[in-house]
Length: 286
Ligand code: PDD
Image (cartoon, rainbow, N blue to C red; front, side, top):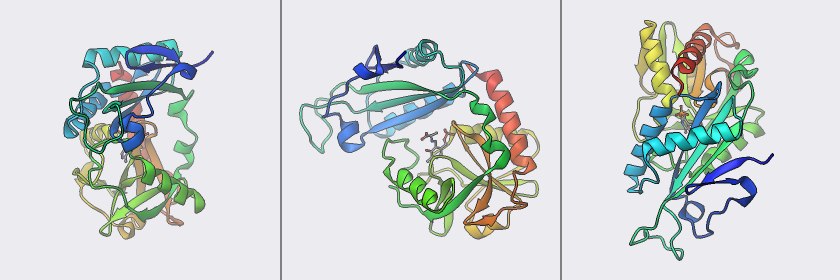
């Protein structure tokens, strides 16, 4: 059975889905996206993803493709039609397809393009990597300066993953002005004693929906949260490290640039936060 995807108000088998070659998402990376995970057939942190989508659209003066209720209904319909128990829903909105290629935004505006599809990942929450931890290398952050907008400009993060792979690592942490910004597709953290340290919010990083929830749970569990820059050197002397994202939840990092972090094994703080995050997310999923 082929996957059913959503394109501009219609549900079609993936082979039949069509977007114009003049679509600005395709030609200019003029589009934004969200990835929402699905656990037990339900959407995790959906209101957060919706709120961030609204903000990304507003920052780029891009028209809304649908109401919040419609977007929730489309997510649910795709999960149901594709029989997704664990996995994710990818949503992309672009500025649409004008009649010709032009750097200027179309005037009058054309309807935005809305595309959603599912990815099935049975056992997503039981990833073996959560037990072994992942390895990262540091690379320069060469992305544009508005990383707070979740755009589909993902070439540098893709290059970063390839740089990591070339060094035998799982992912890369990006460094700018001597301090870590974030992972290629996740937020980065170190743990020192009772303190969890992660980059403060601003245009230099994406405001992770998982980050917000994990920091809230950490504070509720009487852990100390420090939102501030940290260096690779500081990370190498940390007790633990981890990353967060909608697709990895809380994932321990055990090596950085070939050197072990702490004991070189997943630490108790990351394990505990993962447990709390998964438990609370399942309860609040819609
Ligand atoms: N990436 N930072 C970057 C650069 C990201 O691309 C992501 C998410 C995050 C974490 O955000 P959240 O917790 O809201 O998923 C941080 C998604 C998963 C992706 O591109 O597939």
